[in-house]
Length: 353
Image (cartoon, rainbow, N blue to C red; front, side):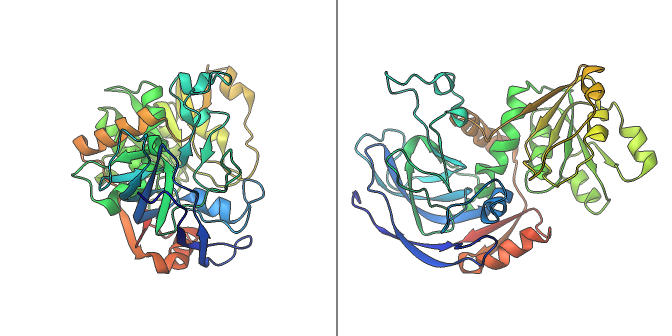
């Protein structure tokens, strides 16, 4: 068992918006409940770009991003019971929570099995463990994480395709589950990119009716092919009018600045729900009457719980939910970042070791 620290080869950023360069760090010792994973694939997520750019606050450089990880377990701590060496697993945007195991520090969130809201949670990168060690992850050859946040990948999902499910898939599935989306519900999606194209598929997999909203027709046919029942171009006045009051739930994955929230709220039926997933680097603004006068709820959702991710992978396996990916060697990480920055990804860039 590789309990001692190891040298990990990565691609790291050393300054805001800087080019990623090869870098080594010494891993944490393998904890009793940890697993070590040899990384085969890692997706590039929009969160990676925000962190590289210090968009959500100061980033601690050097930083190694990437939280859509798939690989093979190469070592396991003595108290690991859910995984074994040789298992193919995935890791998403969280690597640790308290799991409500400390009697002197009770955690209602972990007790309620919503671990992503744990006050002591450790996200996959740009974060610190309680012992002060920094979390470096996906653009690398190895990673060590708590075994509770490593998930077995179903046999029928290839590793490269599985990677985006660990963040993008979990992020869109969790609110669908917790909003009790059911057969016949009309569920809208704004932002048909890495998250949105999976949201369309998961809505369909749950038996609900996916309705896609965009500001152009560039992706129209592909979105319909993915399972959207309807498509509306919100830049077209006629389409925008038809789209009003059309959905029960609206999943907002976009994170651009200055989005027209009043228009988005108008897409909802009375007593509908706007679910915010994207995190733009600015304040949101809308007229309270759009919410109060129509009984609209505005809610947020962060990643997904351990149970959510397990349920998501099971549904993806059973209903053939698969991200569309572009694959690049890990050494071409900067090319992948550029593709994402320029909005050319269709729909997720996945790096391969």
